[in-house]
Image 1 (cartoon, rainbow, N blue to C red):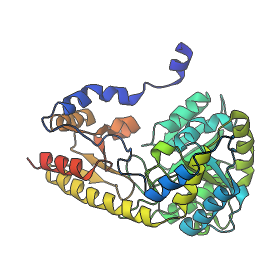
Image 2 (cartoon, rainbow, N blue to C red):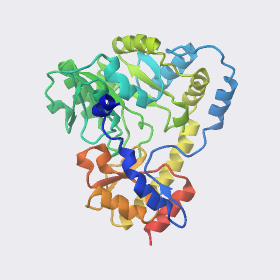
Image 3 (cartoon, one colour):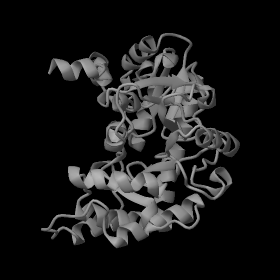
Image 4 (spheres, rainbow, N blue to C red):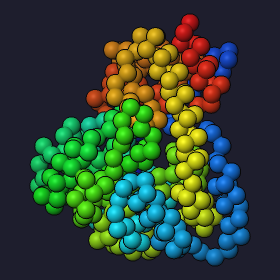
Length: 365
């Protein structure tokens, strides 16, 4: 076990335990805005698709059914503006976190290889590099990285935790730089359908990639857009030369999405109405929390997309966590996502309307 612990950082969420206890002691109960886990129901048409496929005694395939691949390619073209997407351009995965954590290993990276990710970022990018025993570094501008030995470049737009969105011009510049230097680019776009003050763009858009998917792969998830975090449903889309060997590796590893989940994904990707309804819920919650935090003395930066508000009171993030915990509100400290977040907290929109109203009421007192 010591070898494993040496390779991995301390699991950050364990540090929140005492603050969670403080918040839970509030007379009206805790308002947990620390984790971006959906709380609203799975849309009925998706549940029905899952149930209809429940009698699935045989093994599913790693590549998914042809119907699933049709659903993914159709969505990628319809929603992302991608062109000429075939089954060779897509690959189902068992939730996006699994992919992020194991991608460097599956790509064959190891000591001497470098992985880069944003300065403020989802911690699993670093975990993935550590599991592969590769080197890793955080960046402010990826085009200023030394490309020597850089084998994997992560983008994340919209960002977790900040909600920052990379513009089409920025994405175009980064894709061109990565291709010029032979760096494989993976773009984590799991929050792409949740833009509020900006319209997120995919690296798969032809205006960004010039009509070629060479050297680029986008990561998408149904956890947030369709409330399917419990289903572990996600997929990759991009360069077939990258996806084909990943498919073979994943076949050997048995990394297959369950047959009922595949059926649910087909239903989810074929319906835009439930996404609109969920966006409206988050829009209302975001407006309430934004106003309450600003009135309480917070400053909000970025946050133009995704499911979070990136907020600060100009103090240690842990002082802010304690301050809110005393009011029964639990948030995530910004340093979970890198030292640059030391004075920020991440406030999730993923609480019920009743709990959001409770948080707003407590912040107003």
